[in-house]
Length: 212
Image (cartoon, rainbow, N blue to C red; front, side, top):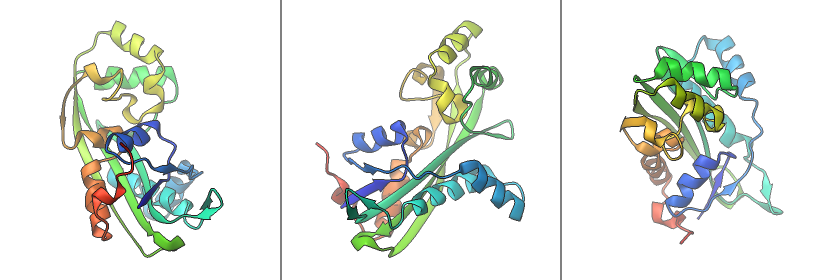
């Protein structure tokens, strides 16, 4: 069984690889800001869990019907998205060093919730048979960093491109005191949630193993 990852996230790719799954990664080319803006214009501000689910679904649906290597998609499609909620504010990727530093100064020694959305489409045989999705959350508790550590971390560039301006599986790992929930949720993809969703579609998780 092939898994198609509607994402170019290196963290999601590595998480799946570590779990024995080598997905086919396809860029969904979704204008995330436009999708969220349209949804909020229709129904008001989104909660973090609703926003990540909306974007996860949009990404998965964006590659429905596409071809890869000249062949139609034949397997499961996974879309994912993440956002960090702290102090009542939803944070995505900071992108700029000054924003990343500001966020670290605010969350330093505190905690927040990392929400990850998942949407899985059964696209076996080149057509849609069904879809399931769920958002998962993990609470992250941070160590107290001095400003020199924050500046050094921001200078690496790593926190600029991840929700919440931190990682647990790379340079940011030593700055995390504790994670309450599935740790892989913080990376952007809850493996336990994904397994549940795959099973809901009638697929055994071991059938996705294709990597030694």
